[in-house]
Image (cartoon, rainbow over all chains, first blue to last red; front, side, top):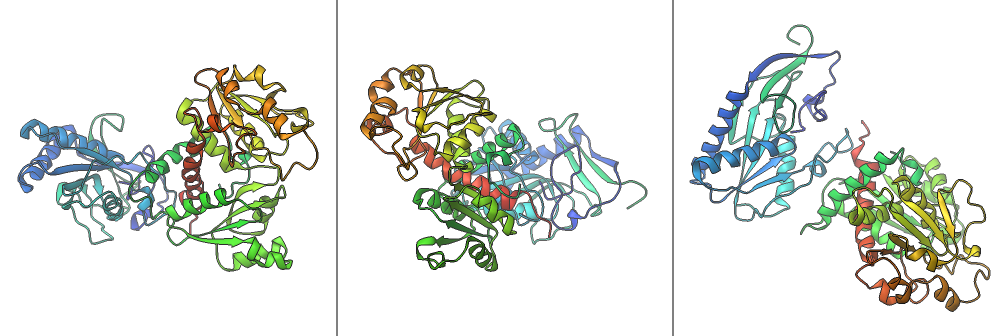
Length: 208
Length: 308
């Protein structure tokens, strides 16, 4: 989830590619895309899709990418437990040491990697925003050193476009066309102040 | 942070604690089946050791390799230094090959700082004379914190033995003090520094007075290569008065921990039974050394980011 520009108040550094463009001037809130209810429904739908596509949840492991992906993975697991009665293992993955922009910009580990045994399982990587695809690429490398999953799938709350690598998500909460200069911020009660939501921020004044 | 030459290179206590927190990530990597991350792929680390030290050199080289950096070993014994090359020329030669970090061990205090002033690469001081050994202090702090942490405030540490000749003691005093420990230096007057102006320590000469009071006994190696005159009557006398014997250990608190920077002189500063006991952290210190050096190399070469 670090592969996107993310000015204060969140601590995620700006992304490496087009998203790493330094924008002059202040950024302002452009629009709210999700409120707490729509976000909850999107998570519930993704949970159903994961179970449907994998013919049950028995072989599934959910692995969240720090920071908000971990919170989302836990929500997906709770949802699956609710309607399917299966406790899906949840892991947390830090991709800092696997990024391709080390040395180009500040990179810091965001939390301890704790991933249950993934060998022979279907791993669903979970992140909040899919942008350039570089975080997902790093996550694949990090994951494959921990075992050999039968398959790896990708679930994201928001796909904002602007891919720089041939990566696509298997489960998408919402496709959200954005400008490169804009910034998609996901807010979750577990990691941020205030209610759940998704916001688009952008440079002050007009359409950037 | 560009270089790590001294514990003083850390701005404050939070900066040290951030490095110890980062070390925890690399301890986790070191416990995995694949003990390697691609973080410093394509970077080159050279170990430049003008003083024999197999363990420190291996620790740094293992750390660099686990970060996927390329490692070059500059071995003085088989090098042009033997033919009279100066330190400056050696550094220029190495730099011309393109290196990102130089790990320097030298018998002269200030050597690492001197190398840092000559090169654009990052320099890590792996011990310079009697001056400093900052990564040893970091691994000691990490090891102690993993037993007594997260805060070391008020932890009582006795540093025992050849303090005068010890760069480990110098770095450890700074490190433990920065983390809130109370430090007592113990040893014969001939092995303690002549002046302790500004050192945040108390001094004792009788180990028996101290050993029942402290949480940690940090035993220093008797550095026979650095002791150039008779500082104590005999090794046997030293062992009986300042060595950590099983009898002395029995007078300590039941949870007092024992540390040693290695290599140990068994039977002199530390008895074999003590060194191998459950209260000895010596093996952990070595294991944590690799993770600490990964954290340092990552911080110097990876984390900060030099914009190209």
